[in-house]
Structures are given as C-alpha cells and as structure tokens.
Length: 266
Image 1: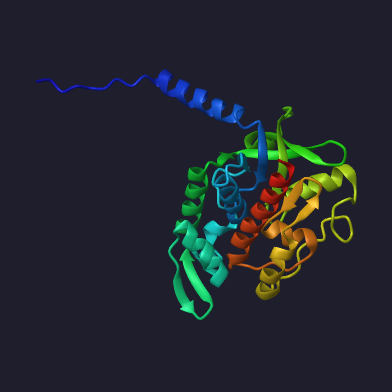
Image 2: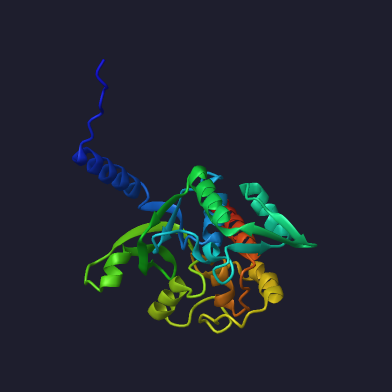
C-alpha cells in the first residue's frame, strides 16, 4: 500500500499565521491592563491578573521575553531568591534548591520559561517585537499606549504608530523606566514621586533594594503603576543585582493593587 503523503501549502501556512495573529491583536486593542515589559515582574503581574479573569496584554520590544532574568548574574544562568521569592516560584512550579539559610537558587532559563508559560496559560497575551513609543493621556490620566514595531524603531523609519486602550498600565520596563520617561517628557514633572520626576536608581545594595521594592510598587502617574526595577528607579531606591525575589513579589503586589481598583470600579 503506497505511503500517504500530506501536502503542505505555503500560502495556507502564511494565511494561518496572519489570520490568527491579527485576530489576537484585534481582540486586545482594548484591555483592562497593559503591561509594558515582559521581565519577571511584568510576567508575574500578568499571570496574577489573568488568573482573576482580567483582560491583560504584555508588550515586549525584544524578540525574547524575560528581561534580565535570562542571564542570571553576569551570564551565569543561576539566580537567587529569598524565602518569599521561593513561595512564588513554588506556585509557578519552578525548581529551587537551598543554598544556605534564607537563600535559594534556581535555573534562570527554567524560571523564565515557566513563568512565561504559566502567564500565557492563565490567559495573558504576550506580543513581542512591539515597542511603546508614546502614551495616550486624557484629563491628566494615561488611558492607553502608542505602539510601533521594534524593527521600525531600530531602522529609524518614519512610520506612524497605532494605539491600544487600557484601563491601567503597568510600567515594568526595568532600569530605563521607559513609560515614565515618556510621560515626564510630555507633561513635565508631574509624576507621583518626591520631585515629580523619575528619581533614578541608586547604587547596588540588595538588602535595601529588596526591602524598598514593595513600598515603591505603586501608582506613579494616574493610571500607571510601576513594578520591578522600574519601581525602585522611579522612586530612587537601590538596584539589587541578580536576586529576583523582589521582582516576583513586586509583580504579585502590583496585580493586587490593580485588582482592588478594578473591583472598586465594577
């Protein structure tokens, strides 16, 4: 009996990608929460929001998600978490090994792939290779984000962007605080920080940085919450280096704050 061969049509393959991608994009032009930056804080926030049936989109300018977590410390792909960070890793199903009392290590590749997968499975939609180049502000509140392809940005093409509308935005772009920098440029020193501007991160001090990050995970401009390293950079706390418990806890915390706001408005 002759072997049955399946026929693959290149145009059908292309049509499948285009139709499914744009259906997904069209369905997420209006969302409850838009997360800018798919690092550990942004992904943890997206997971915790999505599992509560919040419509959430994650926008990442790079090809890969994960932010600084991929590289562990100085490209040694191991990372450290403390007890509370381990609690969140346990929820995700990320393997942790005790190092000494209060310190646990995890494989950074396992960590970020697991967190990303769990966020997607919870219902968050992640769009990579999209850059946030501006914000929409109405009545002194951010109401959406202005997007363009990262390739367009890198090539310096003059191509007009498109927009999505969001009830809340999570600024989790890390050290650069890209969203807050855009807002500051557009409206001046009106951020909810002591100076009204991005305060800037201080030099590395893991203990103080980890302690400060939950306090700094809060609203930084009406409609915009900061999480992860962007929170400490916004409010002027130290950076932490390759310990990631604070990033995970910040993502969890920002989701809790936004969930409370959404419930109060419903």
